[in-house]
Length: 508
Image 1 (cartoon, one colour):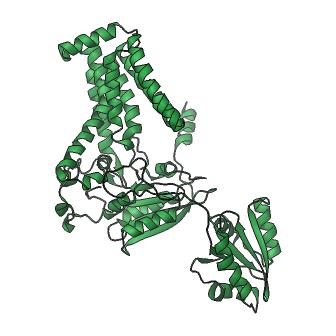
Image 2 (tube, helix red, strand yellow; image 1 turned 180 degrees about the horizontal axis):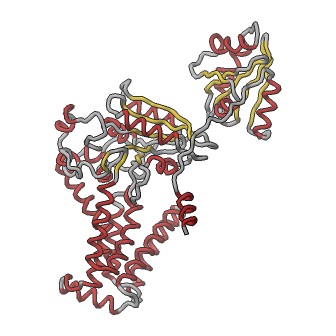
Image 3 (spheres, helix red, strand yellow; image 1 turned 120 degrees about the horizontal axis):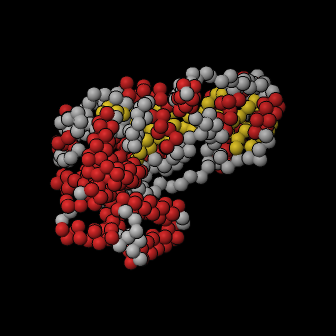
């Protein structure tokens, strides 16, 4: 028995591997040997381009990946200067001349290992080699196509910018730089992924970021032992606090450059991933889910009104089905008389119990949502219409489900869409609370809610309490959490907290 437990712990425990640097393979002096090694590594892939050039005074080679470089830039900025210059001396001197006298660009890197060469050419660089030199020169001539900047798909606002992040990480960096014209804005690049070699960029303001949080973010990302990084969800688990068990994530996600700039002003750190049209934000607190950019574009009283709607919708989406099953099963006398008569009639005319009926409708709704989301858009509309008409009206007329139960589930589902970032935990927890309410009644619901709130209050994000500034109570709870103070008060410099640990900042 102990051996089984030990194996399970070994299987699910998070092992911190010592990152031992892999041995580097140096380049050869002969361009023919380098060519054979590269072809062997790429198995003579059809998109590998090795172009031999006979220059004035030297023999060379230009290596690139087809469709990853711009042919116009390659011919004008690389090949034409190479053919025009007269080289003298050894191969090492020719490499130095290429860097200082031939190429007129600042995106030049000297490389001396095959690992560097593979990473650069697969990133859209062209590599120049000269016979007799153990070094090569990489030149940035990227020319692969990418999606143009468009409007956000999920984080939509009425007033403000219509730009969202796109896949190329350097385009996203330029959007941040354009909004924050300060030398304090710092970009720090690193490579994550043993196979994909994905570029990851840390974005922060040196004047506001906490050094402790920044070092911890670097440490966790460097420990990410993963082969590929294709979406933000690949890195989010590595940024979570170890040992934290919660349905809510302590890593924020945003598609908007202006939203990320506002968070960096508060000392947060943005994480851009090449190929991902969104950014991760750490530290992240729970109150941020209820705030949008529109709150800061409208008047404070309307921002307070919309936030109250969001808080109410969150509680309705999560707890309404559970309280409905709890009261209908164990305490029906708490319903108003007319409502109780309707519920009793619907329960008596359907074959399932109230709890089973509620869970069944919740599951059917999730199936409909997934089918409408994954299918092509025209078919998704058809699935929604068919589901609303057939499963709604026909099922009630056939006596399979009750109208009150369907109404409760529909209200809960609509409320869950008001906060899209919280849909995943809300969808799962409302089914859990429905089961608890049907089995243990109102007291079971109360106990489950206490467990959930204790879990939220005990959770931290890089040392910051997840429920701050509500618990522990901070002054900003009356300035930019429940209420939203005017910009004259929010922009007051003394109200800003420069360091994150142990502090509570206004969030955007």
